[in-house]
Image: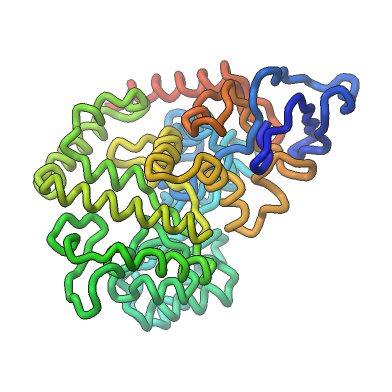
Amino acid sequence: MTRGSDALMDQTVLVDGDRIVAMGPSARTPVPAGAARVDGHGRWLMPGLVDMHLHLQQGTGEASDSAGRQLRLLLANGVTTARALGAAPTGLALRERVKNGEVLGPRLLVAGPSFHGESVKGPEQARQRVREQKAAGFDLLKTHGGLGRETYDAMVDEAKAQGLRVSGHVTPDVGLAHALESGQQVEHLDGWLSALLPPGDAAVVDQIDFTDALDRMDAARIPALAEATRKAGVWSSPTMELFELLANADRLDTLRARPELRYVPAVAVEAWTKELSAPEFAGAPAARRQRFVELRRQVVRALHEAGAGLLVGSDSPQFFMVTGFAVHREMEALAGAGLPTRTVLEAATRGAAEYLGEANTWGTVAPGQRADLLLLDADPREDVHHTQDIHGVVLRGRWLPRAQLDAMLAEVEAAVKKLP
């Protein structure tokens, strides 16, 4: 059983309701009479996974609707908490249905409609929209950028006044340095590549950029920026797998062969194939695409080395990134970038709890913590891939055995086959 950096062997964990109430060596930890027992002998217990960047689709939670299929895919992949940085209008109601036990699903955190240059015109409107989203009950704010500095500052200032975190994109009108000063949680490593350009370089760098601007970026500047990120207390969700996938769009045969695509409508697979076949992706010079990937990997390693907070976010569903499965893809991408396995596991569990200010209530295996847990057939400390070897999931104290998880997957596959 993993707990922090150590493995505690031969342990008994007692759960009452949705909480871990006791744990200790099996020989000295009595199990109450009549308690339901789950045999974990030879297996590994760890906290449930967190997807900090999900796009929650429309639905009330039934297998016949898109959101309901997402909930099942998340649980089947061991995700017990998910943050929707984009949600259909049904998102808040679905969050409450899950919370009230009407629908089985991971705990949901839902951002309000995005703040961007087309949706918000000026500082006063930004403040008003922040207040409206607070009143509506959203958990956080999402920015796509393009607001302009004055409007961005008004949004951030009002968000702090309302007790709401801001997460999302960093565009050139704000820049990485100012986003760090503002305390914005950064998605996709936005703003980083622009910050590596020489002073005075007027190049406009996009999220996906395979231009000659890459040749002028100075990787020697990365450690100082990583240290500034740590000092600012800003957490990053790199979404590595998605961007590496886009940088390797010439490997469509491999992407189309992903086994989890059976849980996605065929029309979506064909749309993704068409989009990635565009010259801007598949036709970009291989050396530039590799430079783009390697710079992002250097940034992630530097953030880890500086001690800055890292989160696991899938940015799914899109571009062959299937809800639930994409969390494991992202964890493997972070490991592939050079992060230690322990760091990746922490980013996918207690790191999210720490960022949200909830580390005292969930994210670790310890008495008093919420019982959101994974029972694995292999040691995840050896390889993050082992987080896919799920024997069962404990969701707020409820045991979901492998057979039930497989039934969820079968339900999703059957529902997808019925779609036009």
